[in-house]
Structures are given as C-alpha cells and as structure tokens.
Length: 160
Image (tube, rainbow, N blue to C red):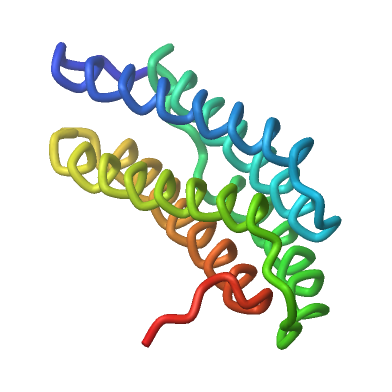
C-alpha cells in the first residue's frame, strides 16, 4: 500500500485523463480507419492504453502494480504486433489522406503523453511507482514507433 502526496495524486489524475483520451482515440480511429492494418493497430494499441489506465487506477487506489508480470504479458502482445506490422513494410502508392490524418494525430498524442510521463516520473518518491510509470512511458514510445513505421511503410511520412 502506497501513500501518495497531493502532487503525486494530481500528476496521476492528469495521466489518467490522458490514458482515457488515448483509449477513446484508438477506439474511435479503429472504426474510422479505412485500412485494415491501421484498424488492427488501433485496436491493439487501445488495449495497451486500457492496461495503462488500469495501472494508473491501481496506483491511485494505493496499490503498486507488479511490473514483472505486466512485462511478460506485454512482450507476448508486442511480438504478435511486430509480425503483423512487417507484413506491409515497403508498400507504397496512393496515400490515404483521412488515414494519414488519423495517424498524424495519434503520433502527436503519443509524443505528448510520453512527455507528460517523463515529467511525472521525476516527482514520485516510491521507486516501484517510478518503475511502473517508466514502463508505461516506454510503451507509449513504442506506440509512437509503431505508428511512425506504419506511416512510413504506407508513404504517409518521409523524414528527410
């Protein structure tokens, strides 16, 4: 059982709102996307965002989550997602602008959310909570990478 300071609670409440927004966006965008691969990616990332939300709620309720157990669950999901993503690597052609707009918004959201975790991590006294938040932040960065890779494989993003 962990006792949170007022500042820690405030930061967690903010992260909770951000995770709720991520879950809603990924769910909505999975319905709006025209490309099947993007739909699946959004559904998978929505599930991970829901797990992040569950972790934040656990911490707010005074429980420190077991990150070793969550890491094992996540590694199984991540490997299946990587396999699906590599199936279309290298595809190019006409860019689907509505899907590109969804991806651009999701990438911007992931950048923002990762940054808010970066700030929050430094404010927590409990090492295990820091580890939990760091674990979530790492996954947020991986979400951004998956979106980036999807965009690049579909000709939606060409960094120079």
